[in-house]
Length: 367
Ligand code: BGC
Ligand code: ZN
Picture 1 (tube, rainbow, N blue to C red):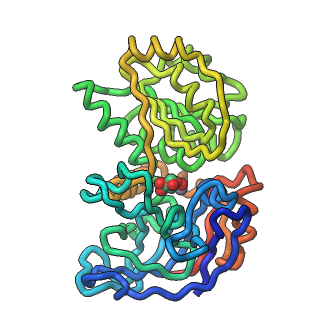
Picture 2 (picture 1 turned 135 degrees about the vertical axis):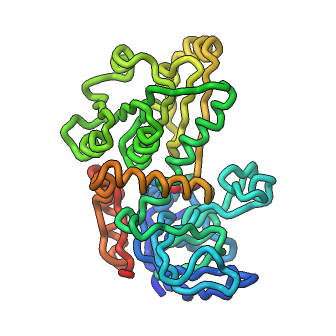
């Protein structure tokens, strides 16, 4: 069967690879789930993998099948699978366990080992192919009523984790009732984080470069949140209006802004970084100012990557509630479909060149 792969280490090596069709009994103990892939989303990580900045092939292979945001339908299950059945819509988690204590308790997203295993990213093949098989543990059911939001499940799980981590860390405060949040960046993670925070009752300001009106502003406003163009209003100017925020989530992938957030967070507040910055950029920061304010204000900086099964389930609940609360808004994120695996060059082109493509995804098959 067909798969879209790269040769890690070789820039711009995206190509079509012929691979064997998997079967349910490849997974031990009757716990296998065979999934027919319907759609796969791609993001900046796939672009960086194709630029050879990131990603490794599984041991013994010289290629890596890419794609980590999947939506599919269960084709067959092993005899001990309980959670899903043929015909169910599903997605899959991305990270697979290593050997640290966190991996052993189902929180692979928190591994303390240097090496991590991620399908479509590092040392494990991904989903940009016709079928894949995995253990029941890593397959998450997607409600029928959310099939129109298909490939958003994985990015949503990352947004759900980022916010959940902030609340977990803030248990240090005994009482924490955040009122104002800034989300930096209005790409998929920024927009989905806006939703998660809005549903938690915060007043959310989502900052991005482009001037409104534009699609990102329309989506943010559709979620009854405020879009702020940094071309018109700087973060300092916004703080002058709103007061310092209680929570800032950076989802820009631009490290100078991630650091700038540190100058604006309020007392006892949290800054969460979610951006993955594959480059070597250096930036100057007012370190004395940040240092003293952070100490005197008991502030916290948190990094958040990936998501485990629990975060996928949280994300699915928020997508369902968000879709009822703000009908028709979330699907606007799904801007750029590409038809068929054969069109992988067009997929990469959109990802690299089209700055307006909020979400590029491949229609692999129909249900
Ligand atoms: C993926 C995450 C992954 C991270 C680091 C992101 O694009 O969505 O699941 O953990 O890259 O590899
Ligand atoms: Zn991703």
